[in-house]
Image 1 (cartoon, rainbow, N blue to C red):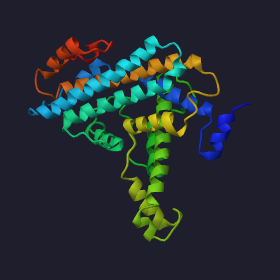
Image 2 (cartoon, rainbow, N blue to C red):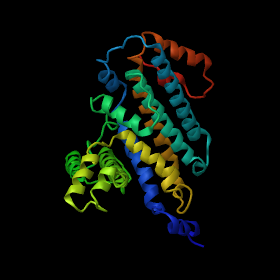
Image 3 (cartoon, helix red, strand yellow):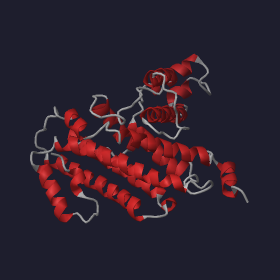
Image 4 (cartoon, rainbow, N blue to C red):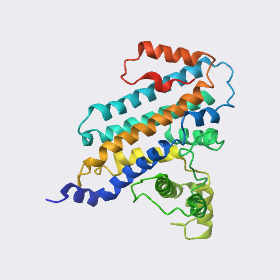
Length: 322
């Protein structure tokens, strides 16, 4: 009885082929880990990047939100670390590992926003947009988390991806073995995310009063294309929008690929380690920035408090900034 459940799912909704969905999931994380482990955002880079950050006026409530979100990110990182160390059957926990990775990234991003302005949006895309506006667009995020596209308009996306590639032809079908292959895979996932977001936005546009008033059913007419491109040009693609897509793919759209079909158990040990490496470095970025913005000396007090009161097994040193 080959792929009985998969065949039933195909009848009711879109399901990517398990082989390609699995490879895309594994290879993007491998590309991120290959890049961060090559020193692209090590401590010396972060020290230089945030050396000019000005400490803001005392804002106790916003600082408290910073510390709270850093703790939540650290908690999820600790869970991810335990999955790596204590779980033998990675298939049983790989989806949970992606969730822990996602929330570490999410809470780290919110900590940065709280440190920047005190604003803490509830919606994922709002967090993504503000993070892009306040950090990526101002060149305050290191590679590879700074790779972005300015628009969802196909012509713009194609031009920007071609410029970023600069001849690099690698994509997500290749398991990255070096930085060049990793870079190609990163751009492949960026481009794919732009296409995914464009498709979602086009469905929304078709429901807008402006589109309905045009009395058209698709985007073949120039007037409909102009409206579509106007709306698409209001959206960018950054690391956090890719993170949202990645977690949604694992938990919703392609529900079957992480626990069904081909046996890829040998790849999962490296995968969970890659999740940990990427999340660790992203939380480190957040710690460097946030510690330079909160009230003077409070970061050290925060660390000392966690050293005394944290019940998590992960070493608190990951949050220390000298």
